[in-house]
Length: 264
Ligand code: NAD
Image (tube, rainbow, N blue to C red):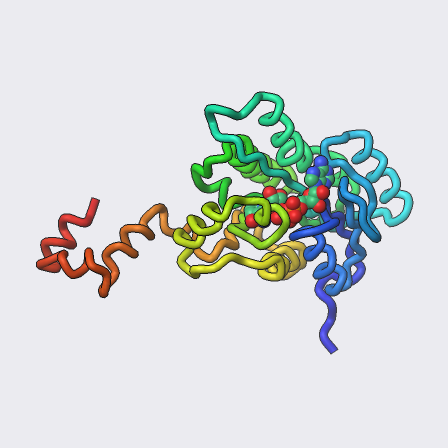
């Protein structure tokens, strides 16, 4: 019989009513964790928590202290997008996205780390947008800010033995991406070496690993789960255009000269 990797651990997951959060809550439960699944959206087994509301975080911390004592994990998964571009985004929408995607994780860390013993682990859910110039500026800048928060938190909490890591999902099939334009999906696929979108079940193993003792010496790390989307630094279209068998590759001769001229 294999031992469950999170047996006896208490883990809070935000945004757990659907999508990646729901899958994470289910996967962590399967690994033996006692999961406190929270969300602004109602659902079975969901505790109401708006991550932007500090009073609600304080109440959650107080309730957890009473019911469990130590808290071993936090997954800052709740997030919203807003697809306005640079020239059209309004300051209030920019602030709203940052409130959920950055201030929410900050409040979670501030209110729950007092309950965390050495060995506890925090996973922040970033995005491939946090590694690129993705066009929805409010979302992209909020996820870049979350990277900074994660790095600072890893540094501050390291001496207490609390780890903080960030995962960066690429295009994952959830309600968030279902609302995107078809052109967004197609462009993503063109830029993804694995040539497909991801599923929530391809996110959960990494979250489980980062919450478990198997990752006990990993902190401050950022791990993309994106089919290679952020790995090629815009080189994919060049590689694809010159791939043997394409018309452009046929006209590129001789090889040695073309190599030289293709190199920036
Ligand atoms: P989703 O929209 O399906 O789920 C997000 C959940 O967060 C919802 O249940 C929603 O109610 C909850 N939420 C929103 N505002 C909240 C608030 N103020 N307080 C508490 N909960 C709130 O999206 P998802 O795809 O499952 O996204 C999960 C995380 O992954 C988000 O942080 C998102 O930015 C990130 N992400 C998603 C993708 C993707 O392709 N789906 C890619 C990169 C990053």
